[in-house]
Length: 302
Image 1 (cartoon, helix red, strand yellow):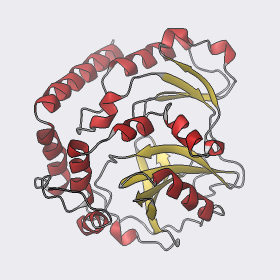
Image 2: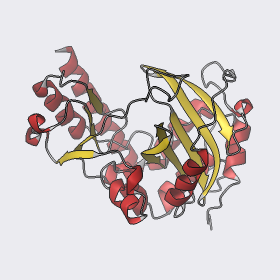
Image 3: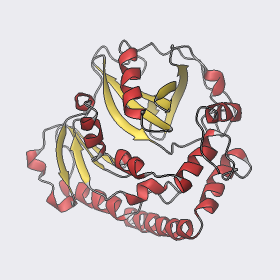
Image 4: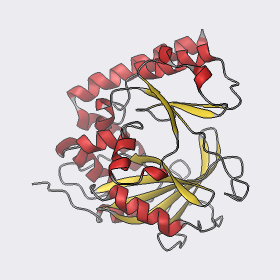
């Protein structure tokens, strides 16, 4: 009953956001922005990274954003670039949870909706209840995603479900974070990688962060915890053996876009694609660094 009540609450909140954003998308952007920066964004004459992302959401063609944020259709985008070798194996795609034939799936896999954040189920040794998984996936597909924060390109994705290869560390990978994968989030501007946000040591909703430039120099002075206003720790992250390949892949994937974050993993010293993120969550960086990143691309605000 508690779970059902939580689903109904999330559904109501999502539709409230949808109604509000349809009436006034700038109002939702201002609400989220003010929580972090204690002021309203300058959307009409943007300067920092977040303001310019808002401007692009409102005034530019984000059709390709929608395709590349879709965890299923992005596979077609990578295939067209000749980068399909970096995709995890796809086991199936369904428009409805009731159509999933769990008997045809391997012992290990990950189920996810194509349009959400955190809407995934990890399966090891087929240890999950199929009926519960179907219920969870069905509810995720019902709740509209993208209206909170006015991430408008997500709202145009047709929801579906996919099953993919479960990525796991090899014995030699990620010694600093043996129980979970390390995310390498490469910010790119006009096809040029600028910096790499590293997320590791995940425990529930908590994780550790590090920031490096493309020469693998630590630049954690630009990281800040939104709640405590303290800089992140200075734990050294080993340079990936395949860093040059990762940066090359990021260049190719990001080349059509003014800004995008290319998220990769490293498995057996090879890059593996995670996702492309256009409206990343913010609050990780100092205000000065957001201003600096805003200088990396221009918008035609005339």
